[in-house]
Image (cartoon, rainbow, N blue to C red; front, side, top):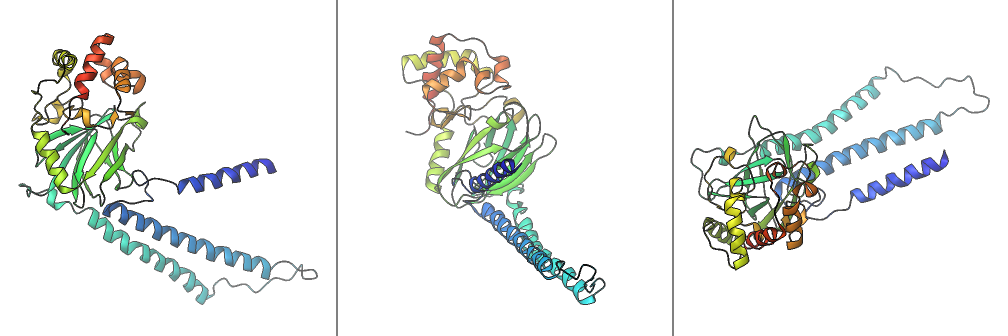
Length: 349
């Protein structure tokens, strides 16, 4: 029994230590934006209050055990009882109320601040307001920029130092949008649209996840948030607007891949960043800037080898994905050609 308790204690200690580890692109304990900092402050405040209460209760508990322990010769002595003591009743009623008020005031203040999405709800958006319609699907993410009129997927590009408003909706079942280092979780429901905002203070790449169990590849439903400075963001938008899918491929092999894409893949995918179709018609990720992405299928490092593995057998990479249902067998030569074409779909020069 003692060995089991030692093992449990060791595992608990390791879990506590590992819980404090993390990187800026992924950890809730290393906030990188205003929203994350507000939530982090509330976490610290609530934890401090809980630790304070535990310490006080523990101190009283130890004091009572030591002070009123049974002594030899006093087995039948009953200490003076304090139930009904008005002073004590007031103390242990008022103190919890005060602690709750200390926690409630910033919680309510931050709640109203985080819920303020009026700039995104205007009939006519201000030109500098960044509003993005986020659609969650099995098992990928689509991002449609309302002011900029461009569509992309898997990589959410945002300018630093600005509030980014997100309209969140699920296309099939319930998912949940979560970028730990930038903001808390918000559900994406098929029946309604939820709106939130986030902000990145520093340029960098942050990991995003689906935080609602949605199927066999739930853990693989990942995306990236890439925060860049205002100038880079504008350059990216301008470059995306030019990606209309009509650009000829650079090499002969890539041109062969483009022909294969136009005959088959185009039925679901688009390579036009200006795709004006309604979200319901966009059934697969937009690939206009696929060559610039860090990941293949959101989970594999972007290399030709991994892209070929995905094209050869999507089900082995991301089980339950809808591409597997509509996918035909490709020869190795066709996969090589498609890889050359897709890797060349870039807006960065």
